[in-house]
Image (cartoon, rainbow, N blue to C red):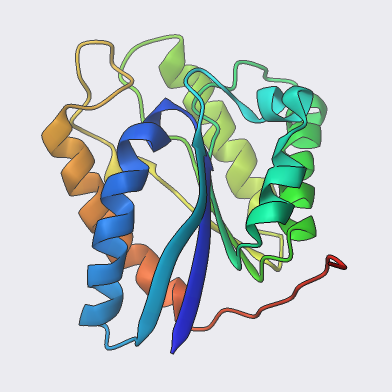
Length: 192
C-alpha cells in the first residue's frame, strides 16, 4: 500500500486547486487500482507569491522538514515577473533544495497555468518554457505542463479561473498525477 504524505506549495491558484486535487487524487488512485493511504501533511498557498518570495521568507525548508512528506507538489511560476534566466532558476533550485532536504522521494512541479491577458500571458509563457527546459532534466522531478489543463476557463482577470474550471482542472490533473504516485521512494535524507 502506498503511504502518500503529500506537501503542497503554491500561489493563489494552489489555494483554489489543492483542496480539490486532494479529493480527486484519492479517487484517481483508487480507479487505477493503487492501494493507498493519502494524507496532506503540509499545504501552503500564498497569494501573489513566486519562487523568490518563498526564498526570501526562508521558512519553507523547516516547515517541510517538520512535515516529513514523501511527495512534494509545487505549483509555482504564475507570479514570476523576471525574465532573467539565472535569477529565476536560482529561486527554482532553492525550492528544489528545500523539497529534497525534506526527504521527499518524489517532487512534482506543476507549471504555470495559461493566461489570456498581458503582461501575464507573456510572463507565463516565458516561465513555462524556462521550467520545461530545466525541470525536465532533473531526475527526481516530474514537471507537468499546466497549459493543456488551463487553456480555457479563465475569469475576468484572464489569470484565475471560474469555480467550475478549478473542479475540471483538478479532475484532469488527478488522473495525470496518479500514475506518477504508483511508486514513491522514501528517501529520508534528513537526519532526525
